[in-house]
Length: 306
Ligand code: HSE
Image (cartoon, rainbow, N blue to C red):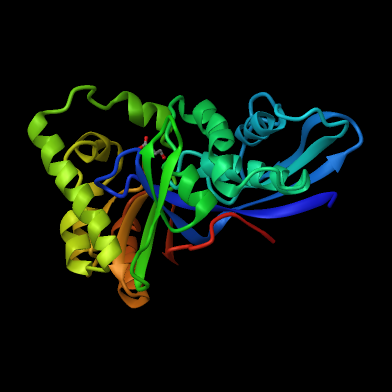
């Protein structure tokens, strides 16, 4: 195989109660990446469309992640990348993770698949680390593996793929303002009151249980964030009203997607998820901000060849 084209899916990290440890993969929303073998050694990025991102392979998340996997081999050829970004950087739906995951998945295929999918997490994380200045695999893991992923440990890449009820749909409202993950992390408190940790742990544990037992009521009760949302919500115009609107329109829960500014909601069934999107749209339409609304089922497969 000399060339490969991959779909690199968007993802929702944190899922309210699982800061840096929980995420799920979106269906139909994602980037496209073509990787072609070249006669000359090394990596080049010949084209990026859809976003202003560095063509310098030492400064681009995709090629940084690709270099991490390629360090293990001494190949006498190189690779050329063409990237079509449909996920805006700084949107909160895993733009950098999509680039990193697409790159390591594509390269692994082109060199004869020496690594299992799960083993690619540590290489993709090198790209994510460069972008967000922190090690968190809660976008990388679901973008790579699909479905819901729980990151037991961000250092040992201990990832657990979780089941989820079939009728679970998500609505994403993406207000087109750029919020850098590094900034959204810098405003967080380093010390958390014990009481909030206890409440958050209870909700995370209950959400995991609810995903296994397909208990929509328990999913709804558990989608709460006492630790991160109070700080980051201030960076998102009309966040409180949008969240309230999502809940009043039938969503099981709603919160900040990753580090924002996108807001996600989870609903039982496509119809409710679409209604949630329409109602949220009515609110943002009154703001002088461009926005996109997506409705998606959970993507079970993750990154794939197209
Ligand atoms: N867990 C990360 C954060 C996700 O919230 O900073 C970034 O998309």
